[in-house]
Length: 78
Image 1: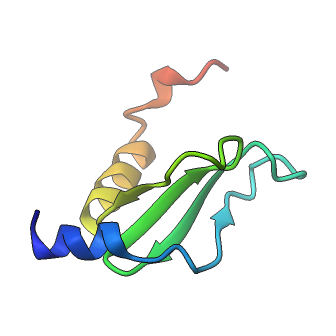
Image 2 (image 1 turned 90 degrees about the vertical axis):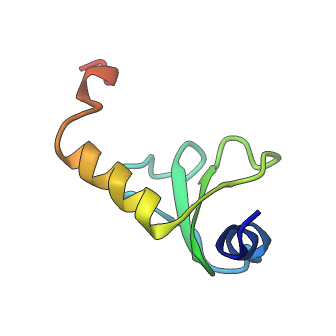
């Protein structure tokens, strides 16, 4: 494992989770993100027993840019 990956995967999850303003108001069914050393952790509040996924800033930026460009729109039932 590379040093950057070591940092990302060993970073403590001791920050504050944030969620989209479009998430449910009761907070029990949302995707949450937390800034951590080396990147961002992503969590599903419905499954607190699961380890959060961790992404580098580059990986998260690529995903966000693709989502903004509509690359995943076909996955959403409207």
